Image (cartoon, one colour):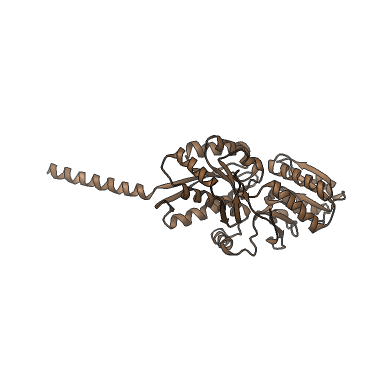
Length: 388
């Protein structure tokens, strides 16, 4: 009887071992990190990034996983909040690298976080792709750092050219965030381009990250000879600045940058951004093909039109997944990280929802920008493509 019990017990153990081995094989995963601002001054940025990631993860996992050299891997995404702060972005990078053991990182999104965090990723030899950081320093001299968006040295000149043609004036006022690398750099680039080719910058005013009252800066703008106002600022500031400018009597054109592209822009501005233009990465209104397919999925899942952060994060994530498929996986984390970086560097072209792009040796895409206009319904309507 004891012998029979032992045989049965051994059979059960063997069966459980086989079941566990089968389960372990089925649950093989690819772990990617998302270094994004889920709280802080611009939580919509983090929300858009996370929602784009969830669409990809859910769709691929529902189909059985990502095919890598004939083997299926389920996707596991780790979302870490960087609070839209540089030190928090560094902490998030260290957590994703050392604790979560991710293969690669999507984000940080904006330049103010991607620049300091990118140094960590590069030093630790972990591939990072920033969807939305347009400052050149995010990837400069960093072979492990890539991006999915155009750069500010491209955005500023094409924006200045468009503004000159669209508004016809010679004088511009610029209000920017002195404490944000993105805003400060883009303001300086636009100023340099405008003064060298088109006219004068008659007001060049800054503010701080915690400021909410812009009456001092805007009074100077309203009382100046400026023909239009340029705001290379995040959407949360733009909402306040444009509404306060309107209250002070400003009725001339307003031009903005790609950091405007949030679903929260229109309500935060109380409609003051109607008729304003801004450069961005894609236009949702009137989109076709794979771009429309992405928009439809996003709207169905979350109830609102995805902004450029969502679209760029979608593209950035798929760029990493393509690199993983191209490189293959060995199970050795350090080797796989390097192999993924190498594969990302070899992607010559990529057809994304934000357009077709080719990559430079520095990991930067060469792609078009678009200008959109804010409609009275708060939609971003395509106006013009701006070529490199």
